[in-house]
Image (tube, rainbow, N blue to C red; front, side, top):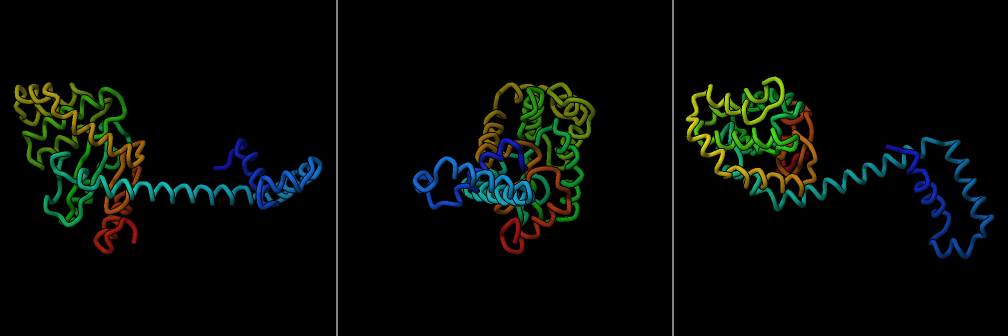
Length: 256
């Protein structure tokens, strides 16, 4: 997006187009000539302001392409870690032909919105392997909820865990340890064992692993989805996610 503080940079770049190099500009133009060129450029941009937006759009596109290239390079080295069952919770078809990773926070409104997309994907695609990776970035209570959730997975099968997961994401208010423990209790979890597992610290390495992966992939918010060779950030909807999964099956990439 164009901002006023970027105008000097744009003007400077355009002025430089009048000469092959900075040293040449210093030698070729006097101060008055530089001022004259600057005025010409300024007047031209005032007459054709759409050029500024065009330049910024081109810059934004270039930055997005660079970001995507960086993500793909990072993903190549992180792929095995992200899809390991022991580092997350596996739902859907454990032997599915496409692995789809959701990186989420229990207190993320957009993650709550995306829950129906995840349910829909698993319902419509029996060959999809879904992995949940806790990325508790929205406060201490998010961390506490994830610690409980990762401990709960040791006692529940996939269907039961999905019930636990949905109840946390659809609950009102902030989700922390107390609410997560209550939901687990309602589902018949052995609370003595759960308390021991929560206090053991076993969940921390899994959360830290996701944190490191998210940092390498430059994921700054939730939800984020990893599928194929790409990362999709935000509540983009089931149709967009299904399209990416279809592309992976077709050409092995998020977008063919």
